[in-house]
Length: 152
Image (cartoon, rainbow, N blue to C red; front, top):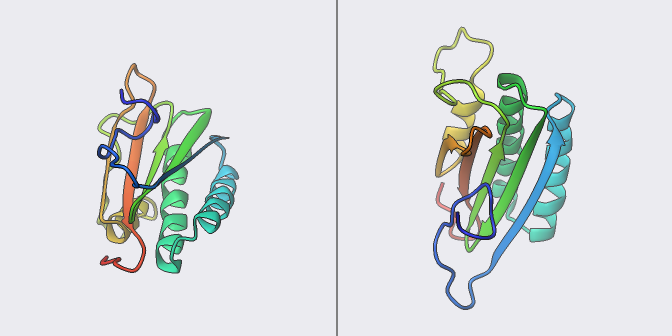
């Protein structure tokens, strides 16, 4: 694995002058940790001065991904990583144990739960999931464009 991130594989080789910012935090896998994840994300994105649309979208995406990790896995903690690279923000959430098959979009209106990934899908430019390796859980990630050239 590339140095610098246990959660997110390298996006690209950084050329001189490219700014990349990274922030990572871990929380217990309890429902009240969703609010904590939003609070930590909000504080970091304020420091990074993301535009308002990307900021709001990122808060919702973090909330949905952390909620999914808490509700749908047997984890004792979740790890969230934010990475800002040029005009992209990448959010990754790792749990410690996942359902077989990974996260699934549910498009049925009569299901009270399961619509969080539909929101993530609608708000971001791309998203996906992968095994974390060595049976340590699953990583679900989402990417948002931000800044003046945002076209989402």
